[in-house]
Amino acid sequence: MENLIVPGEVVQLTPRVRRLTAPNPGMMTGPGTNSYIIGTTELTVIDPGPEIESHIAALIAAVDTRLRRIVTTHTHLDHSPAVRALRAATGAEVLGMRAPPQANQDQAFAPDRVPVHGEVIRCGDFSLRAVHTPGHASNHLCYLLVEDRLLFTGDHVMQGSTVVITPPDGDMGAYLRSLEGLLSLDMNCIAPGHGHLITAPHDEARRLIAHRLKREQKVVDGFAANNPATLDELVPVVYADTPVKLHGAAKRSLYAHLLKLEAEGRVLRESESWRLK
Image (cartoon, rainbow, N blue to C red):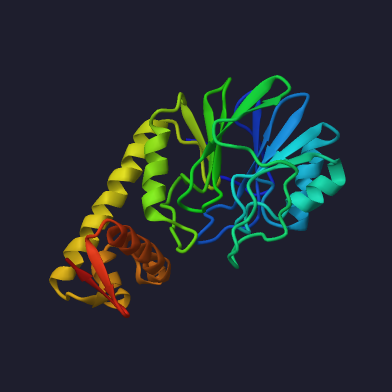
């Protein structure tokens, strides 16, 4: 395991990849949002992060005059807002998918180009393959550094915590399908948007799928006490293993599980309640 992540410290992860973590630690961001600097001569930044002046200054210092492109995994407010200052300072091309119309999205994000699923982006002496991974966000992309078999996962896979799925843009069914899609990728390591490198990527994807399906079964089992039941009645039952302070976020993921079960015809919505069929 690497040493403790220190915001503002540039860490060399591989000969091609450096990590610079933003000073925005928290319950949902762990040690902070990871920005990745890739390349040796012609540079690319993945996820410049939040609009924090000290972080932007550190990024500009790290890339000097070599930055050619800025790539985003998605447009949540801790991942893309620093694009604007970094582009203004360097003139780099911006790639990413446009923001969905939700309040927690960076509506000012304006990419020069939108990558498509499977596209290989040539970046000087390395290549990035775009992989569309909706679930946490409908516009979420992962990027495979082909030469190093290193997958940058943004918030699709995070180290040390599970991802919150928040409808309407977050979609549990899509998230599970996107995790399944990772199993066919030729990768040997994951560089997440929060936390340390993950060195057994396929095992991690399988673990996350199993975790979500186990939680889904807890949702189904949660109707044993009350059927129908409201979200507030289900949360303490389904997330009995989760600290109460996290139940607000858990309620959003519970709602995403119920929407998935509803789409599969396994539960019915009755006003403010849900009924297991």
